[in-house]
Image (tube, rainbow, N blue to C red; front, side):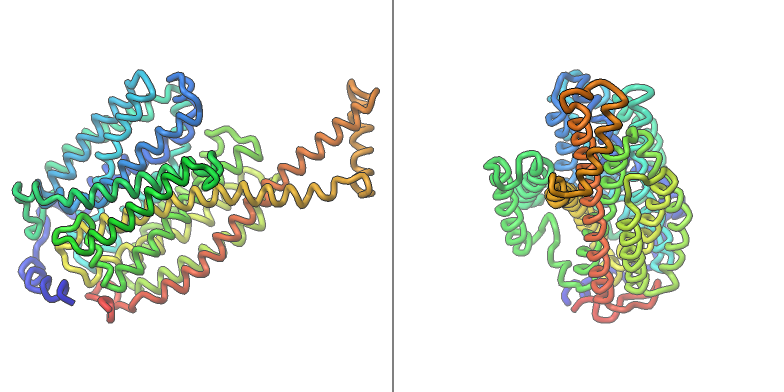
Length: 538
């Protein structure tokens, strides 16, 4: 492949480069900034009703607080490579921290919803550069055999932050004000900025040139904006507007199709593309991108499904629902370093396959234990089961994505990988949410068939409950007790149907994980921590 032959001289010239600061200090610094950004993707979720009420907006309008951030965030993710070529990677990383921190302050003082949405757009622009640049800086700061341990730290950030976001957001909102979910970014951002300026440096193959300012792929950026704006709005508002039965949703769906089709056609032909799609000629990178999209989807879907189940069906508060996820975060802290060490000892595809197989077993177990009488301890244990496989999948896939590629491509690799993970998360959250609703309605219709007067068991249950209601309070005359019994049974039916909808979705995630096991074995086998895998560029 041309990419491989062109990269060999540069890799030989710069192969012995090492950062002046301790790589682990560098990793901790960039991870701190990335953690701050990833946390903001979920910390505002539970505060939306408070934000909408305080700013005089409806709950539906309040959801734009999330959508505006996610759209701008997704658009900026692939821009890091170009920005680094203009001002350098470290300077771009620091600029992103500054934009994100100042925007967080402006979000906190926003007096109205339109101003808050504008500030969230700028916050998303700043945050969109933090994740991929943090990952690229880690990749270049460590030698290949230790890269897996560095990605364990990054994986902890990428996975733990959205898991604890609802817990922190709920606690802050309940005890202080929703504005403090933005203010807490300010001291973290200042600390991350100071440490980045002192510790991080660009490797010699990152050559900044202000002349590259005019080389931005503006058409590619426009098409990416069109595609991501259409996709995110379609996903966020689809269920609310009955999906493609709505002209509103069809319009944004068409916008996405036009944008993504044009983007692929243009980027493949462009000399200096915004997203280097020719990296997909490398088989390992292409498969890793697909797997990372699925990992991001499964992770984000599970993070939304469980607290949603606990709040809607078991009556948990937002804070308690978030607390039920805490044990999963503790499990991640324990397992992530172990997975990082394992990456240097076992082939990436074997670790990924084991992780996906554990995913399948975990989701099957969850599907058999998600019930309406589930205790807090059981909910916490189910969360732990869902979290344990993630480090093995996340780290091995991230590590394998870089193997065999030119070092000069690290910015592009990290941008595309993070872009795929975020897009996968958005898609799965929307799809699983819609499936829970649809499957719940399906089971509701099936269960309602048994609520007929001809059904002897239903008659007996109704009469027993009618006697209870009639004897326990008002309404015994005129059939009031029987009406109350029917209402109670119907409420139980709806709850049971909704729970069965969640079971169906968890079972679907189980089968999808089984397919991901097969996909993992499509990766070329590599010697852990060494060189490119055989056939990686085919």
